[in-house]
Amino acid sequence: MSAGVITRLFSLIAAGNFALAFTFDFIAGPTQCMNATVQWTGGTAPFKLLLVPTGSLHPEIRTIADYTIDAGNSFSFQLKYPGNSTFVAVMSDATGFGAGSTTSVRTVASGSNTACLDRSQVAPEFFIYTSPSVPQECSPMTISYSADAQPPVDLFVVIPGGASSRIESGSPTNKSFEWTPSLHAGTQLMIVGGDTSGAGKGGSTDILTVASGNSSDCLVANTTSTAGSTPAATQTSKAMVSLSSLRSWNVVLGLLLCFFQ
Image 1 (tube, rainbow, N blue to C red):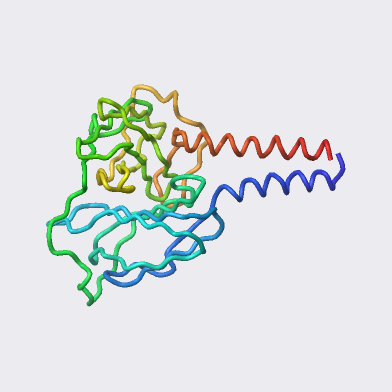
Image 2: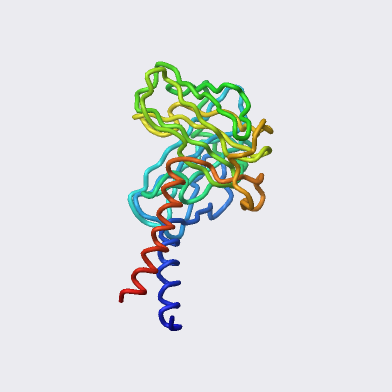
């Protein structure tokens, strides 16, 4: 095979991979009641930005924020979280939830402006429940939701600093899903619930740490983790399986094109 053909093959493969992922971050530290701006490179519109509060406040005045961005490579919004509270941000695009990565846990800087802050207790529109309360590697976990949800219900796993994804979607008759986390013990995650009203309308769990299980057969060897995050294996979900399959087909297509052109 000639050098020109090899170069073309790698160009095709690279083009396919870069089209499937993008990165984003805040251009400055998020501050209470001030405008925050995120910027990203790549991706396929429309984009979505999900902010998930972590920890707890008394009273809890924060809600999950879900923004849709039709086009562009930056977005500004007023951050309605108080100083010293924490949150995680997830960026998605047309290819799937979490395609633009997930931030590590961020701390909101304090400020003199408090006009945006709610003073009363808030609650999600419906609730999600997990059994057992702590996920175990390669062990089934039941996630159920209250009758207030408006199906179809979406469930997402958010891994701070790691690869977040949609783990389930649908309208089961018993209002529950079974999920087996293919994640290494020690991985930190949150489970977020959404319905027809939007992602996060079912609130979220607090940050959970995956415990060791009786089996590790579902784990993927030699996985990589994002710097600063707990090591995490590949999250088994319809979204990520589709992503992996698409990458494989890009390689096959590239080979076929090279040989038959």
